[in-house]
Image (tube, rainbow, N blue to C red; front, side):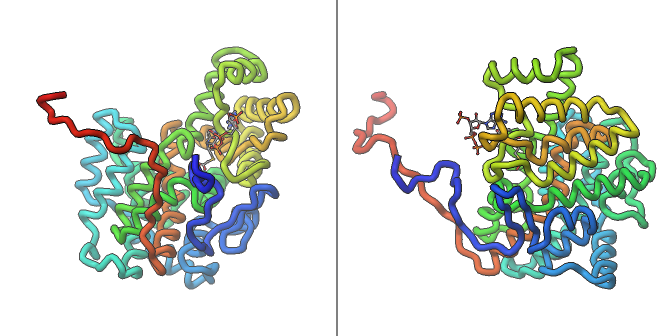
Length: 382
Ligand code: CMC
């Protein structure tokens, strides 16, 4: 392997960005200079997306105008609803339904003729995508349940409105705040695989719908966004096995299974987002079923104290506690990754537009290891 080959682009700098920064040794994440703790505890998801897209925290007037502009765009076209219904009938996976929905939104985009380098138009398109993703996802879930979709609630923010559209009931304050916080924690995270995918697409000056659709595709994999669903499935597997979580983990690691929700390309210590979600999971456990919180903390303790995994830099990531939080909020397990996508639209759009401001086509190379000078043989002689 060539000395300068960086498999998985590990540690390779490919762009400058003002959006977010991770200190993997200190376990610190900032969005435009603000710590994730301060934002998660003090801001709303809409404020954070405004910050990512506009470079500063909004004042009250700016936030009101931004929120209104999102709320005005929340409805999706009837054709999109009809497609969600057909996909639900066909037992499609929610991430695949979302991939189709985002791609389909562009058919009804009012600024479809805007030039690709009209970044103002791209930002407005991004805002429309962010506004419509929760509506399409909630409709898909309603159709799966054999129910009609619920219209967006005019007075609820993006997080609370999603829970409302999912169930038809206004969420209580704890559920709305917890979910809003989860969205903030997932909104951006440097050049992760899905953001980089969006940027690669954006760097060809393809439109923002293509870039976000690509982001959804990259996020769906189990090494990236798919891990939150895997964590909950593991917790349920442990619960059903009647094994002590420590024994289950021991057995799983002996079989060479990876523990979902552990390990990260950038963090060598516990992910700061996991710390906040752990607090939420603990709070929800106090009023609900503490089983899931207990299993997760037992696993974390075992892998840390007895297996020394954390010492090796394999620590809980954002997905480790988000699963049990969503479960306790009553969200279906296969909606966890789509929720991650719903939030990450903020980061994808922000990074694509930031990159396109000073665009250069992203085009790396591979070290060729195949044969040279092959003699071509016509098909009839092979
Ligand atoms: N459980 C057990 N061992 C692990 C785990 C894990 N979850 N993660 C990494 N390792 C080990 C791995 O076996 C390897 O050991 P060795 O060097 O002895 O072969 C070593 O750690 C390095 O692994 P790697 O795959 O080379 O590291 P990476 O930086 O490419 O992987 C990762 C990062 C997230 C893909 C990996 O940690 C993983 O598969 N974790 C489980 C899936 C997961 O939780 N993904 C969500 C990531 S955070 C949310 C997001 O950004 O989407």
